[in-house]
Each structure stands twice: as structure tokens, then as C-alpha cells.
Image 1 (tube, rainbow, N blue to C red):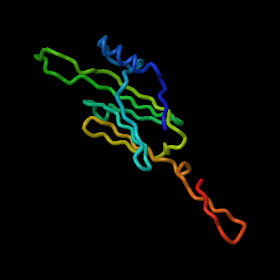
Image 2: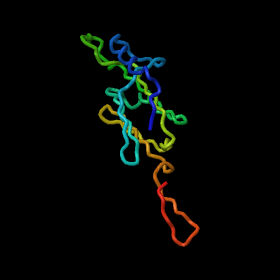
Image 3: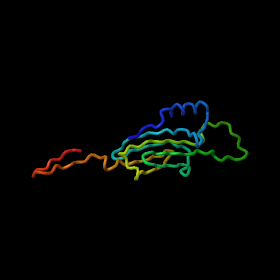
Image 4: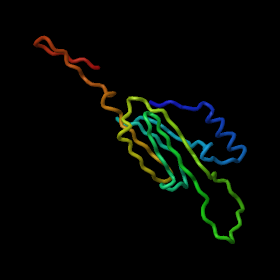
Length: 144
């Protein structure tokens, strides 16, 4: 149902973890995701803990789905001194090429407990259907 668009994405993610760099708008970090089919919907779940909903941007252009998010630093008092900072900040992005069999006009997005869940219905034209054969008095049904 979808294609990975960048075969080197995992290598970039590993390099960023080792180097301690955070994503920028020009070179965002990847976000972990799961994708699966559930009934007549395709479900994509993206991990975005600590990101507010107003910092998440979801776009679809043709069949390209783009999700961008920005994790901003938590406001601290002027007297606070950082002792340890392991949570990555910056920009995260994921682009997915969606199949023509998905209905991109009716995507639903929910955000709960740091997980962005996108539900994309399977297009009616892609669902199996029966086709009647006409011409004689008995009609046969075939599966198309």
C-alpha cells in the first residue's frame, strides 16, 4: 500500500543518534512509525511524544503524504540549570507514497498519548465487487 521513499533514511537516523544532532526544517529527523491494514482502512501510527498538536503538519499532494512535526524545548525558569538532555528536539518528518487504491480525500487524523494515528480508507474502486454477466436468462456472478 505504500513505498519507502528514501532507502538511506535508517542510516541517517542512526548517524543522527550517534552524533547527537537534531533535525532542522531543511534536514528533518525521521519519526518511527507502524503501518497496517485494518478492515477497510489503512492505518499509519507515528510516534511523536512531547509534540503539541499545533506543531504537527499533515499534507497530501497527489499520492504523497507528508507529516512534519517540531518538538520544541520545554520552557524552564531562568534559575534552572540543565543536568541532562537526552530527548531529541527539532524537526521530524516522514513522507510516504500512497497507493492509488487509497482514498486520500477522507483521511482521518487522531493524536493521543504521543501517537499520531492516520486512518486512510480503501477506495471503493479498489474493493472486490461482483459483476453480473448479462445476455441470457440466467445471470452468473463472477468476482472482479
